[in-house]
Length: 254
View 1 (cartoon, rainbow, N blue to C red):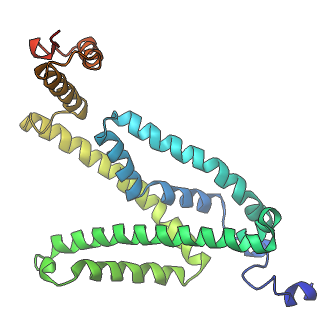
View 2: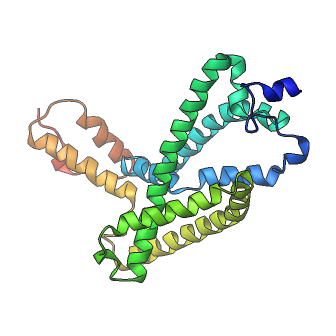
């Protein structure tokens, strides 16, 4: 054991975690996954898919399927570390070799740094928006976004400096808040959409109806250009099957 401790291939960070040091239970791991799933980037991805033309359920299904596919290799990769307390840089020595494991560990670290920067920037934008709402003079400050970025970064670093226990505390505390906040956001959006639909029919048009209007516009544009191609006809027949009457303007001229 002393030979391993004196080796240049081992240090305090690379030593296996003993059973008494494994403080993460089922709830903490579930809370970690909640924190990885219920984030602004997930909302942005789903909203982008819907804006690109998907139905709302198709966007949600795509995001859920992507998370499920990513879950499989992550679970396989994390199983030895969770069961035996082996850190990742040591685990990859079995497949990458002693020197190659450094490349794998550095690649993982670079990805983590990039993702940390993205999350910090998104959090800083949220802080900047919140400050602009609470204080109207916030936007007049020079570099107000940089100030928000620095403040959010300091909070993150303060948590990171507490080590893995700091991460465990954050995930354990944030998971219920994320679930409750997401449910409240869903209720708010549903109520707002219902009220908007009843008071302003133009703003209350469903995304699916907007897509039908775009299909109508494209078909009419093809008709005006004298297009005889077949790509406009399936859109016309599909829309008619869905109960949308496009009218004479959608018919292509021969």
